[in-house]
Length: 140
Image (tube, rainbow, N blue to C red):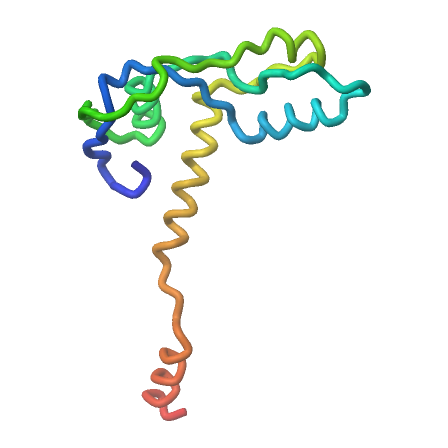
């Protein structure tokens, strides 16, 4: 979506009502650090977000963040499990940790970073040959 000026058509396998939860990378790193720095070895813990979203709604959210109009085309294909989400009750109880950022906040940061990286890739880097040509044409 970041590579197109207007959005466009995004194909989603299945109806797009399958759900997932996503965790911003900084939150994931913080959670891992909490687990690693625990005084005692904690039990097996879920590390994730309890904020669940459908794939179609995820695309709609990203298109709003991008300020672009996106058309979702649901096509036949594998959908994976119907829903996936994290239950954070135990990690909150054991380590006092839970994610602090919403999905929208994490996506805003991620989208801005992706857009910046794409813009950087559009700059043309001069090759050594360009330098030789420039010197010759300038009498150097």
